[in-house]
Length: 235
Image (cartoon, rainbow, N blue to C red; front, side, top):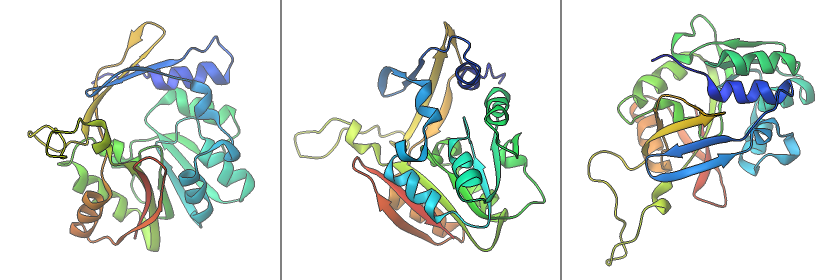
């Protein structure tokens, strides 16, 4: 799948002040929605509580997976003097990170990262998204586990999107019977271009906990957000 890297283009346009526009995101269960690129450039004080908590808990050598515009990494590098490696599959986003002063940002797919170990691995802004599907989740968890130092931690957030489905008359939920309800497909559009649709996974906490356990990881709930979202720690 060739990537137009529209998300990264939007980030780089914003960073270089090249007439940035809103991103348009659409999922298999929701209408097109505008997302302000400026939000990706937020400071620590503008971040949701879950993200602030994750950054407070980060320690040692840190890997920021899917770093986007690099806001989390910059906070850790500049405010906490931590050794941070920021990775993203988007060349444009990584260019923007470098322009923002991130010392160690590189274009890298987490699944091909080798021969490095970290004390903290961060996956924020629906960190489970990159797993794509339930079926792929064990492969990602095993990979993340292989990159951890002894006593290392993975800090990951997601949401239980059950609230997006309609209630039925028994007080239950109308959810698709074919597969897990948190498996969505995502489409991103920017400046009249549209990216190929890609899978994106929202995991409820119990499902994440079970998957972690099955792959030899402990999982604990760190913080619950206001809207079905949560931050978990895997170790």
